Image (cartoon, rainbow, N blue to C red):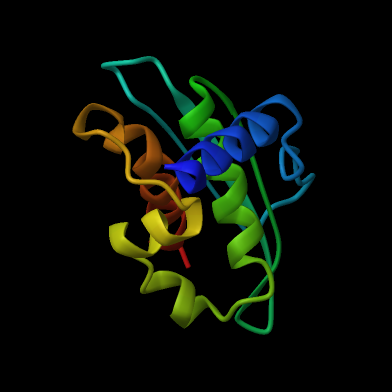
Amino acid sequence: MLEDQLYRETLLEIFRNPPNKGEIRDPDLEARLANPLCGDEIRIQLKLANRRVEKAVFSGSGCAISQASASLLVEYIEGKDLTKVKKLGPKDMLKIVGIKPTPARMGCVLLGLEVLQKALKKA
């Protein structure tokens, strides 16, 4: 219970001061999605070098969970090989975020992953 509270507080802090929010002037890969049910919107941009994610940022708007999850995801993939990044799935995303969302909030957690997967289809 205490651990869940710490994760929630961490996510709120990331939402308030997102360390990985930004823009890449000339990204190699980019995608954007919006969740029409809640209005959350995320854009992810990637700069690649030697089949690795050299730089990853997100931008967008929405609830604390969607925005913090996107921030944690782009931080996680920086420096990783594209082959490994392409294999990320929902279970990986839940580990990255560190919470068990309610079914209604699962889409918020996974929106960033969906955007990333859309961007990677262009690779």
